[in-house]
Image (cartoon, rainbow, N blue to C red; front, side, top):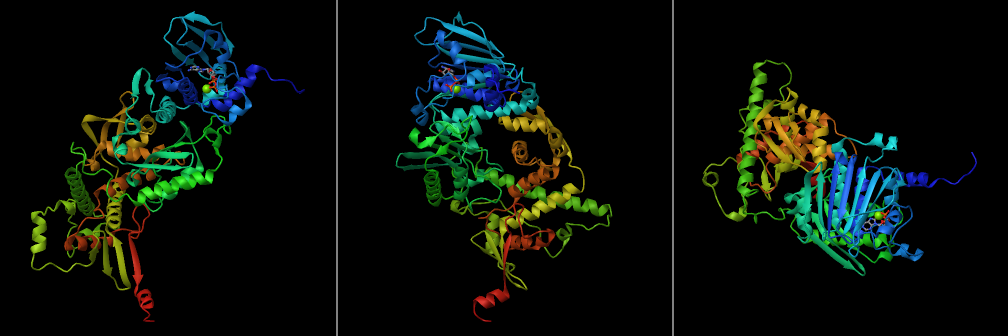
Length: 609
Ligand code: ADP
Ligand code: MG
C-alpha cells in the first residue's frame, strides 16, 4: 500500500480511541471544559450509563457563535497560543482534541452563549459531519449533549459493560472533578434521578462527606506541608477506614486528579505498621506547585504527569504524614465521643457487640448439639465447648476506663475472696502472658478471639447452606454508584450467601432477605463489607473468598478488643478454646496471634547456657 495522508475523520477516530474509552471519558472531558470556562455551576445528566445520552450544562464563559465550528475541529483550542505555553499549562485541557473526538463517534449538539452575546447559537455534528451553526435562545454558558456514543465504532460499543457498571465509572469521573473543584456547584443525575447535589462553598470535608459518607469524613486527619513553592494539604483517613483496594487514594495536582505511583507508595509507607498487610489507606491530598514544575503532556487523558523533582515531593508527602501520625493518637477513633446524636455512641456499640458474642456462642453451641444428635462420626470441631473443666467465654461490654464507672458484676469479681488464679497474666489490657511447657507465650487477645470466632462460624457455615430470613420490611440501603453496580452484578453470588438484594432505583438497593445467622448485625454494614472485595479490580473474589470476608467481618466485630480488661475466668475461657482452631497462631488477617519465647532462648539470653 502506498503511503498516503489519513483523512481528518480517520485522524479524529484514532484520537478518540486514545481519549474516549467509555461514556465516563466523555463526562470527564466535558466537565473539564466547563471548569476551564470558569463555570460556578455544572450540571451533568446521563441516560443508561451514558451510552444513550450525556449532557453537561455550565454557566461559564461560553463560545461565540462564529467559533462553534472551530470548537469541534481537531487541534483547535483557546487554551494555548505558543509552544512555551505548553510548559506552563494552567487549564485542565489544552490539546484541542476532545470535542472533535467525541463529535466523530456520536451525535453531538453544542449550544452556547457568551455573557456579552445577544443570543446563543447551536451546532450539531453526526459522526463528525458538522451542520451549520443556527441561532437559538439559551442562557449564558454552554450545553453539550452527546447521543449514541460509539454508534459508528461497533467494536468500542461492544466493549461497553452493563448500565450499572458504566454509570459507576461516570460517577467516579464526576467525583474526581467535583473533589478537585470544591468552589463549583456540581450536580449529577442518572436516568432523570438525582444522584449528587454538591453545593459550592461548604468546604472540602463536606464534599468528601457527600461523596463518600459521613463515617469516612468523621475519621479524617488534616495534613499540610509547605516546601518552597510546593504546598500540600488534605486529609488522610484513620487506619480503621482502610480498604482492600487503592482506589480511594485521591491525589490532585493544581486542580487536576492524577495517579502517581510514587505518591501512592509514599502513602503506603506512611501507614506502614498501622494497618494490616493487604489493606490500603484512604487519602485526599491536594498539591499546588508552579505549572512549570510539572509536565502534564505525557498522557493522552493527562491522568499521569511528570514531576520535575518527584523524589522531593515523595519525601514531602511522607514526612508530612509521618509527622502528623506521630502526634495523633491513632488507637482511639479520631472522633469518638463528641457525637451525641446517638448513632454511633459507645454504649450502643458495646451492647451490639455483646449481642453478637451471645449470639455467636449460642449458635455454635446449638449447632454442636444438632450435629451430636445426628450421630455423625466425623470429627466434631467444637468439642472443646463441652469440656466441663472450662467455663464459657464470658465477655462484658467494653467499658472505657476513663468513665470511671464500675458495674455491679465487676465489683463482685474484684471483691471475690477466692478468685481462681488466672492461667495467664493480662498486660496493658491487650496481651496475655502465659507459661507453657516450652517457655513463655504472649498472646494478642483480640487476634486470638477473632480467630476462634472465625473458625467456629466457618465450621457452622460449612455444615449446611446459609439460611436466609425474609425481612418483613425490606431494608433500603444507600450505596455509592459503584457499590450499587457491584451489588446488582453479583446478585446471584450474594444470594448464595443468603443476602438477597433488589434494585430500588438510583443507588438504593433493597435487602429483602438476609442470613438468619446475622440477625444482630446491620444489613447495611454486612452488605458493604461484602461489596468491598467485589469492587477490587485486581481479582474477582470467588464464593469462598466472599464467605471468608463476611465471616471475618462478624468475627472482628464480635471479638474482644485490645483495651478490654478481662476477668480471670475470661482469660481462662479464651485460652481454653485455643485448641479449637486449626491455625491459632494467626488471626484471619494473617497477623500473628501469639509470640513464643522458648526456655532455651530465655536461658541463652540470660547467659545461663
Ligand atoms: P481543549 O479543552 O483541549 O482546548 P476541547 O476539544 O475540549 O479542547 O475544546 C475545544 C475548545 O472549545 C476549547 O479550547 C474552548 O475554547 C471551547 N470550549 C469547549 N467547551 C467549552 C465550554 N464548556 N465553555 C466554553 N468553551 C468551551
Ligand atoms: Mg477540553
